[in-house]
Image 1 (cartoon, helix red, strand yellow):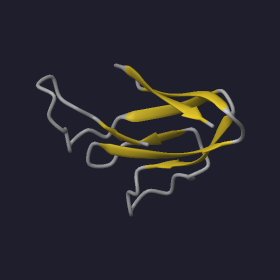
Image 2 (image 1 turned 45 degrees about the vertical axis):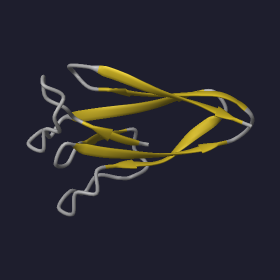
Image 3 (image 1 turned 90 degrees about the horizontal axis):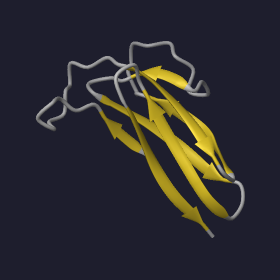
Image 4 (image 1 turned 60 degrees about the horizontal axis):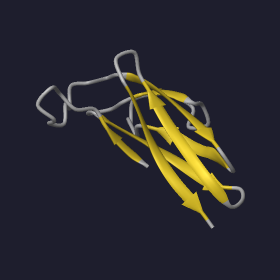
Length: 86
């Protein structure tokens, strides 16, 4: 799941180095989370990371059938993605 940090006008903010956390509800787990910043030493198995050039990505694997909710949070906002795994 790709996440972009947007400014007030809805444009990508490549200057944003926002700290973002990810959580999952339902039959799934986060198998990787990070920004692909070549200079950081963050662990891709952590549930918190800094956005790089305004972007971050989560790899989520379903572990069963059902409704999955993936939430992304920062100090200033929260968003979520809903997935139905069959």
